[in-house]
Length: 324
Image 1 (cartoon, rainbow, N blue to C red):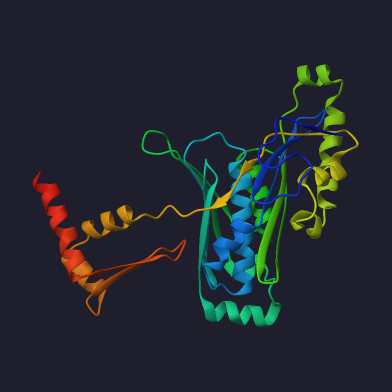
Image 2: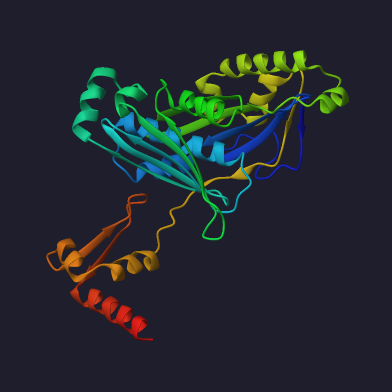
């Protein structure tokens, strides 16, 4: 049985991409989120010329970030960041509470090419990063405390590293399965994430289950989740509810309104020019090539160019603001 709340986006049972679909395995307190990215992931990756191993890992980051953010109640930005010690030095994906997603990667192209020649498009996480850490950050602006959790990149995959973080730092049992594929030059990515909430005796009595039954239900849910294939996760022809029904129909699964995700950078002309105004003349001179300062957004690769006249105008604006 799939029980539906009010469903956002397309109707229940319809194949759809770029969503976070919350659900609960009933009658147990096992909460989950199914996230599938199509156009959003491909739009972000298409702006960069990443080699396949980096693009695949970036796709996993892009789908994991909204999966994790979907578990939180926040107004602001959730950021998932990797700092590596190897060929991949930086991976970042962030998503706002409105579903605006972006990401970028920093890497040594020669070293990644060497690994790709050895392993193909699927290079182990540890070979790409050579350790380092993964950080989970919630930023709700100047008027709220910033939260950050950090874990070592000591596991074989991004999913396993995240599971270890929740187990060790949050004491929350978590299962995650991530898949990313490229077909006809288009990337798709999905994640299935379940979390076991603490057993409540009163809730157990109300639901007619014991703690032993709850423990067994969690082990069963992990096995069922692991049975999900890559094709089922990323496939565009199957509704998310149909997949959840196949996995958890024995006890029942309830879905809740889904949230849409879209590729959207937050860079603006105003932000760029504010940074340029803050630079010294010497710093601007160092950035000038053939009389032009060029600024490229790491996320969306939009380029903005400022000649000497435009920079002088910015400087004059900055001086007027200081004088006033």
